[in-house]
Image 1 (cartoon, helix red, strand yellow):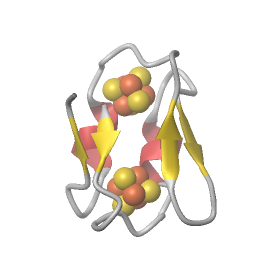
Image 2: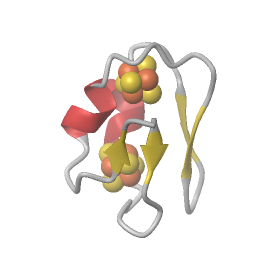
Image 3: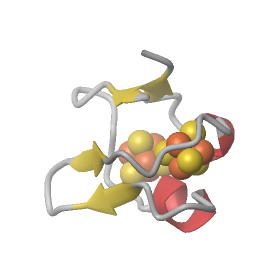
Image 4: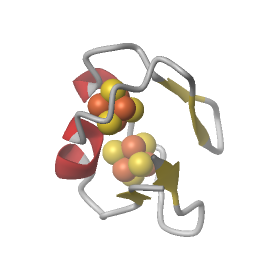
Length: 54
Ligand code: SF4
Ligand code: SF4
């Protein structure tokens, strides 16, 4: 997963939706870690379409 930092508004929705604690929200950016299981829930919940595969 990757996030477009120009689009992300740091709402935290993806962090709450992730079933595997693979996303961390910092003040101005989010970061994915190796816990990601590619379920793509974060892509679905992001209100601005900032997350994509890759
Ligand atoms: S794809 Fe699933 S496991 Fe990976 S960061 Fe998104 S919600 Fe979490
Ligand atoms: S849900 Fe989208 S806009 Fe909100 S923090 Fe995650 S990537 Fe950023």
